[in-house]
Image 1 (tube, rainbow, N blue to C red):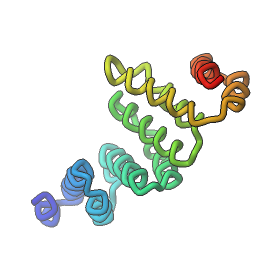
Image 2 (cartoon, rainbow, N blue to C red; image 1 turned 180 degrees about the vertical axis):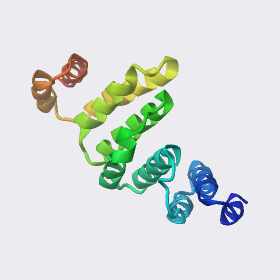
Image 3 (cartoon, helix red, strand yellow; image 1 turned 120 degrees about the vertical axis):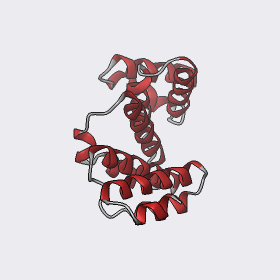
Length: 169
C-alpha cells in the first residue's frame, strides 16, 4: 500500500513512503525485500531526514547481509557526517558502526563505538551495551588486550581493555 502511494506521489513523499515500506520489511526480517525497496528510491538525499534514514537503513541491510565494509562506507557518507543528529540517531548509528566493525573483525573499533554511545544510554539499554562491549573485547587474545590497553588514548577504552585483559588471564 505504501509503495502504491509512493508511485503517485511527489519526490519527497515518494521517498519517505518507500523508506517507511523498506523499514517495515526490514523490521519483519525481510532483508531482501527491504533491499529491493531501497533500490527503488531514485534520490534518497532530497532532505537531511531522508538521507539519514536511507543511509542508516541501507547500512543495516548491509550488516544483515554480512557486508561490514559496505556498511562502514555508507555510515562514513559526508551527508551523514554533516547532519545534525538526534540522540536516537547517534545511538542507532553508533550501534550500526559497532556491528559493522565487528563483522570486519575490528573488535577494538567495535567496542570503541559502543563506549562512545554508552553515556547516551540508561537502564537496561546501558547494561546490554556494556555486556556487548565486554563480550566484543573478549574476542581478542589476552596478550593483545593488555598491549592495546597500554596504548589506548581514552581512559574509558583503556579501562575496558584492562578489565577484559584481567578477565582473560
